[in-house]
Image (cartoon, rainbow, N blue to C red; front, top):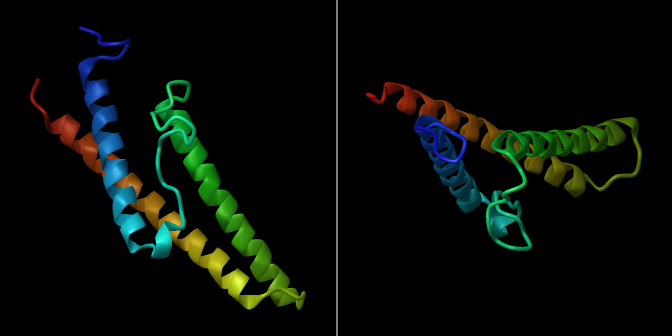
Length: 124
């Protein structure tokens, strides 16, 4: 029986992944000073989950954001290495943001794999 176009196990997987993502995001947020990075999966204007975005698009956007942070940090490091006038604290902040974003991405991936394995162990 399909529920909303998805079979029940897919709905359970999405719920488990969303909960795992929120748990990992909350753990990362708790370790950040002043909650500098927004890790929510809700739209900023309405505060409700986006109906227009699919789960895959949400993950793709998150990975692209991590990639942008890493590219920004790499650019600043290259400027420092080339001797361009760049504030060292800006470089360190960019590197830390990129590092934290990557750590969060790895933790989310781990939670997704864990949720998938849990779903696969369920008896039908």
